[in-house]
Amino acid sequence: MKKEIVLSRRKDIQLLQDLLIENADGENIEGDGKNIVHSKNFPLKHTFADGVYIRQMDMQAGSVVIGAIHNHLHAWFLLTGSLAVVTEDTTE
Image (cartoon, rainbow, N blue to C red; front, side, top):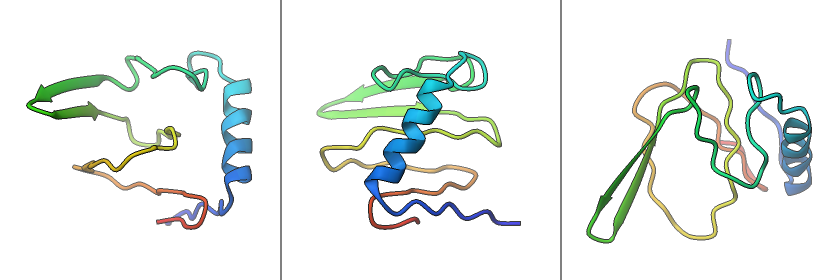
């Protein structure tokens, strides 16, 4: 069964983020909204090349991550699994 996320406005996204940060317990919900989470649950690998930075993150099935609003264009790759990208205007 496919679950659809319906958040169409920045205000709704911000409210969800604030609720998660407020309830962060370091185990089920991690993060403070200010710093990149470095966790055994979401291991990060950083790779650098000439003018290129690549950050790889592995996630367990059933996990949810809310990332920052990006201020510049960037490339990303989903190698396995599925995701929903929610912006102010769309859910893809």
